[in-house]
Length: 67
Image (tube, rainbow, N blue to C red):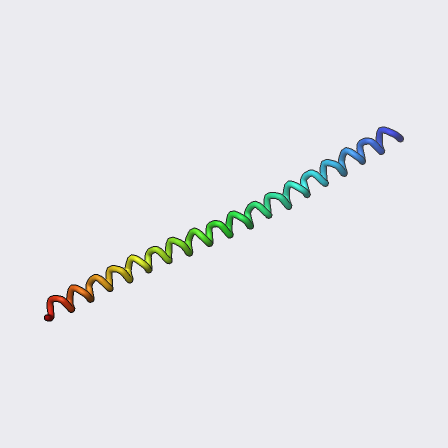
């Protein structure tokens, strides 16, 4: 009878370990998705900033050439 209780305890410990690892992996994935989203937003911001600078430089050249 003691062996059955021991085996049941080990099995429950194993299940709780698997459950904890599952929750941990889901949290890590969630954090990585947030970091990826911020990185993509930063890349998009820099891309738009460069486009804006290019447009501003182009419009100032046209203004100088028209005078």
